[in-house]
Amino acid sequence: MDDGGTFVNSSMVRGGVDRGGGGGRPASLLLIDEAETFLLPLAAELNNLGIEVSTARTFDAATAALAFRRPSYVVSELRVDGRWLFDYIDEVAERVPVQAFGVVTAYPSVATAVRFTRMGVAAYLAKPVLARDLMHALRVPRFGTGSDAMPTTVPLDWPSLDRTIWEYLSRTCATAGSISEAARRLGLDRRSLRRMLAKHPPSR
Image (cartoon, rainbow, N blue to C red; front, side, top):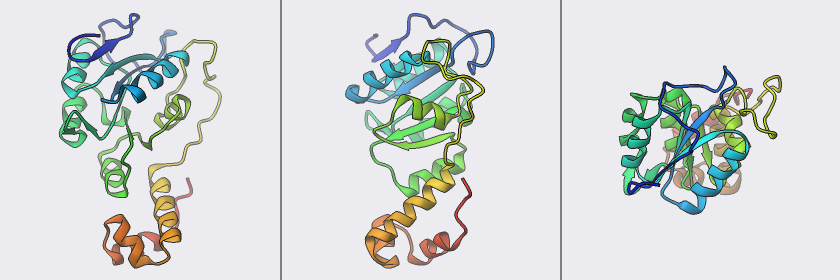
């Protein structure tokens, strides 16, 4: 671990982006979060699945890690070391496609989920999250070559962000008791919320 807070798995080497789909090489992932109580256990769990993991506790450290090696996937908390991911994701996108990006946050909201969906990120999940669930959400084609690897023939059936948002809105309305109260809790306009709920739920 360097002074910037980045740990690089000893098996990682310089090179281009590898989705972990060929040549027997496992997928690689950069995990960005300032909370070590979340960062380290999840990194260890991902390693056990055969994923090559690097971690960073700041966006500056993440930039240094990306300069060293372009990972297959990047996963980050919404806010790290006082900076918002919205202000950093463009820098990441220069090295790793947004479609290979995931958000795992302790502060999920419909507004940020919608914003990241429009940006094209692969996954938006609330903490806590299991490593295998994260791999499913990112649609990683395989889990490396370890004993806990998932065969490539197993279909991954994970709800889309659109479906997740619709279910979250519905649950909020059910607990709030009215559209007006649900809109207040969600920070949305009542008429906008009503239109969103009036749509047919995404099939997946």
